[in-house]
Length: 397
Ligand code: LMR
Image (cartoon, rainbow, N blue to C red; front, side, top):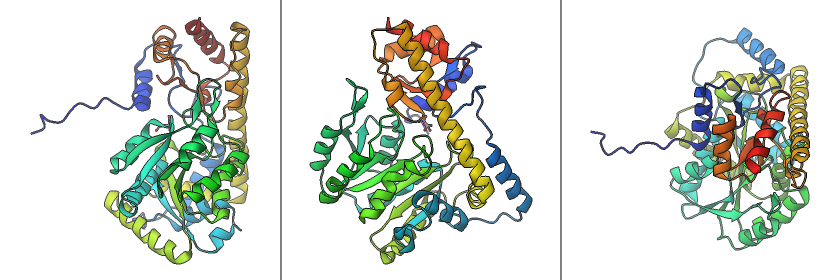
């Protein structure tokens, strides 16, 4: 019956992470998947999240289905986290948010919405982008093309080329943008560049679709929502997904949101209705437990403050690892410029290493980074940063 089913080549990120798990070497180093590890090399159980979970368990009762759009308290907390409680767009009722199965689930529900209501729209993603973006949008039946983004020569942004390409995009094209901590490069737009991008989006009537998977890992929980708030203030309509995988360490709970900022409250009612229909067709309704941890944490001022401090600490640790890796590499290879480790932000840096050099890192040194050259800085710690630098220096010489 299934002879015609072809083998699956595997996912470049998840398969490499699985290969790391099977590697018997005790000194192996996992810088592949986008997961935050603490200085002991463990995925932390945040104290704030633990406190919130205990409260949720204490109050847990029957477990009915959630509505298709998710829990009301979760949706409310997500909106205020993204835009601020007094944001005029929220107060006017033109913002709709649904609870999704991680931000990936939000991307898929959003992609289905685009396919249905803008069937001729192409999706433009940055070159490069997270490997799964293309798969999700193509999986929804949309055509995906790229706009210029990463500058391999400088380790920075090709902003002029990006603007020029988007200025030529067809009306109602969807532009996938990383709100902060670009995955895989760590190269972000500055505030001024976001402001320069805005008129291009408006003039071409483009549909921004923002991916905010790393809120808190760039400049701060509030600062990292700048692009969303700027777009909402401008009156432009857009989609955004957010995730609590990284900033709460709730990877396996699959807690995310899809938000659509609409022109007015009447359109928002219909948009929400169609998102619910999409959810019903895909997975009926989201799971209960993880979302309640998020909602409880965000709704409790004391626990929330504790969480904000923990996010600050994770961000500071990553920055310290960037500084150390840069220092050791610069000392080992004095003629080379490794300043991109300092200017790039968030969990990832794009090293510019070739696929062959990445293979050597894995095979000869047990250092796992993606074949694209993406290195997860959040996997570095005070015990492995030196060995990582030694390995990178070895494959570069
Ligand atoms: C990553 O980019 O490594 C993470 O977002 C995990 C994933 O699902 O790919």
